[in-house]
Length: 379
Ligand SMILES: Cc1cc2nc3c(=O)[nH]c(=O)nc-3n(C[C@H](O)[C@H](O)[C@H](O)COP(=O)(O)O)c2cc1C
Image (cartoon, rainbow, N blue to C red):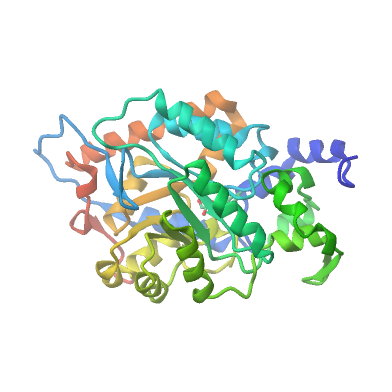
């Protein structure tokens, strides 16, 4: 027993469907999860021909820096359920193939260790020109602000390139499968990255009533504060300096306007992979609806949600993104094929991005634009 949990039970969950449901499922009836995919398929690509594509440059500007490819590994919590050193393995693989990597706060490997593995792997690579992939840290503004502030300081010290603040989790979405599976995240997975912070204020811990159930005070302190507003995020942006701050989980063009007013370095157009509000707008449609506001925004726009191929990357860039995040594709590769399977998935996706850009007639992927896509007239 660890932390009141029977580890054999956890082990069975890991091997059984519970973990697959947690990773690959969505909220509610999974309408948004399905819609993301269906709507990407609606974005038609219009290739140009007879352009010299003997060399294809995949590098783009992201958050003020040049990266080798416009692909970022999405932050995913509790990856230890699929691999004991998942975060390190993902970071190393990403660094080898030129992808940027965003570490979840809910990592079971401390962020300093991941940053060190990232830096070591990166130093062994040679990327063309000034491009190099970025190491990002995803953060929740937690009820116990001391914890988020401390993580922020650690991220600056550990050499992360930017902070990604997730803003679409005032409450965790309705994950029916997890409830039916009685999925419980082992405490050591929840706490590994914040062990020291949890010591602070441990004296005022007591069980709390939350959302109809009783949660441990520790878990309550680590949860995103549902009371946060733009003012809190602006304060966080200032305290994060010199790190650029990116807001993840935006769907409405009005929120992009506010992000532009706040001078944020970027946004991630995301519905959390259909894991939060079921019925929420798909990300391709949301991104498409931001066309006017996008012109006024000097930051970068990244989009995620069922992006799985080189064509999807072209589609995303075609409707206004500067880059994409990819989550479950890599989680699945790691779960099914281990570290080797993950390397293969990254290598294949990068090859696909190059082939798709070439087939689009682009010698520079960054030049992909509106003229090379068609979307349904009702969007
Ligand atoms: C298992 C799992 C855990 C996730 N944990 C986080 C998290 O800790 N923080 C966050 O901002 N997003 C989290 N996400 C959302 C992803 O970052 C991403 O927005 C989403 O999965 C969409 O990309 P995909 O369809 O390629 O997986 C998680 C997604 C999955 C599948």
